[in-house]
Length: 190
Image (cartoon, rainbow, N blue to C red; front, side, top):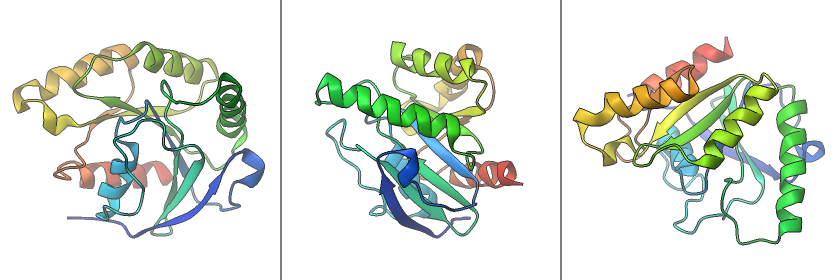
């Protein structure tokens, strides 16, 4: 199975602190605990690279991971849950908007949706914001292994109907769709 070597590069709070690399970059958007860190770990088959937690809202910075001198993944704070003040949330929002709108290395955003649940209100709000700015985006459906195989296609087509564009299934537990996802990311880089 194809896998990539990956390294944690740095964390940044805002655009001016982001690393000055020229690799294509893929920021990860999604609710807290949707599986963004597990996705990173599954792609490189290293469960300890990105910190995972059962407590929502642990990621508070933009965390950059470099994959085999091919691309970067930027793990963003999850939306929809955080035990922080309103002031802190507004600061995050301002910094993340600046990063998403002005970072030249961004090739495509990746929005994560949990296969076990319907698309949430804040998922729709995020997608609307992204489409309002005409930013490139595709969807990863995480935790697909938690639902019966017979329901995979209907979950994926429901999300595709709502969001359009490319929708890829993903399981970090058994890494079933890793190779297809890696190929898709590499193709976007070319």
